[in-house]
Length: 319
Image (cartoon, rainbow, N blue to C red; front, side, top):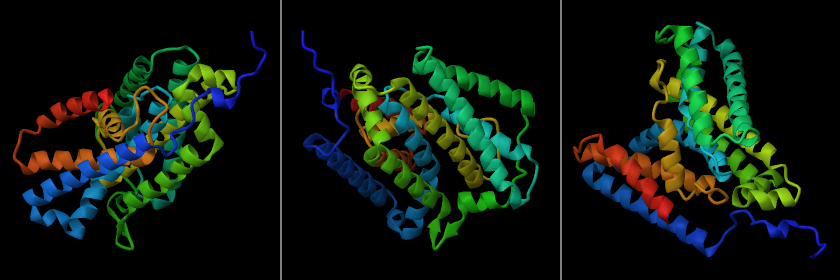
């Protein structure tokens, strides 16, 4: 028996540039281009700058959620509670019953606090109690839903600081503010995943948890941190979405839990963990939004979107 100590080389390296990854990325870009061509043929006004900005504004809240979901998927997890976190964050925003913009930092701090608590709950259940990610995050979804309905008694709200309209619908130098938030998050989280030691640990844990343990990585801590990041980002996305739609109900963000997983998987993030990037996941968001627009422009039943989502997940998982 050898006395050698395991080194980092015994665990898989992060998702660095490789021929396979290049081909996947170019395949996504080609598919995106085909979608753009299809939609622009169906609607010649689609390629106008103003319309493209509107599409990006529509895609921004989902894009923000997908960034958080990517962290969890990379460590072999998934988070079904993101939509419920978004809705609870939105309800929390209206609970202050104020139109004073000076309260916005307090509202954001409260939402981030909510995200931290939910993320810790999910992470501890998955990493420490070994509950499956599906069951753990489904449980927190149900708990949050119950808390929302108990607190609001099912009522909706629209009392928000005017600053939320700026976040969701406003523009800075002609660029949608929610898109700028998405870009900022992409840069920060892209750095964390691809250039920081913590990002390397995420890929090692997702690619080979046993190997990561052998080289001294605290896999439980990495997994918990990823769930916290995901929930915090979802809470912020909930506030951005509130600003976009202009009001709050109990189901704000409904469907984002599945859409975020579908978009990430379509963008090359492996459900089995350890492979994928934020850039690819965001390409998946654009493709998903364009496909939904194409369904509407073609006059097809909107329920076809659900079928497409299922087919996409199966196809992407098989690749």
